[in-house]
Length: 149
Image 1 (tube, helix red, strand yellow):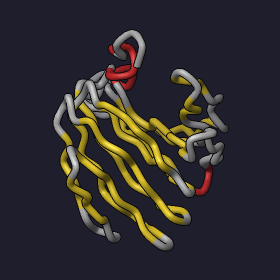
Image 2: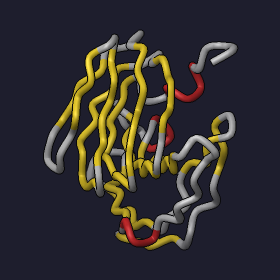
Image 3: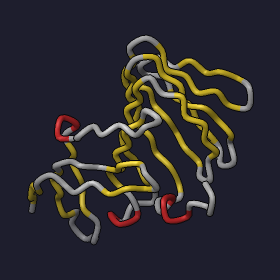
């Protein structure tokens, strides 16, 4: 059984717009979870003042044991401290895309991956536009956001 839903409403995570997309879900036999298909062309990029457009595409509400999605950076310089573990996969970049972690800058090219442990203080940086796939655990990371972050 497969169905396609229309554009999903965006929701905000403390000022970060998350996910506006069309997806197709397929029930997996003998499980209550569904396979979820998202066409990236259906994502609506809404950049925050800091230069990111975050799209959370799967999470605990889907029965997943992780959360994952796509993020776009546009001339970004975003200071951040993680309260979750994150794997970040560079999909594309124009001029440059890097993550500064504890004073060490990691420049990412398409196909590169960076694992970032919980508690990492970092800066996401891009010149031009960059896109990355992210996966985090726990899957309800957004609900666990510490006060003041």
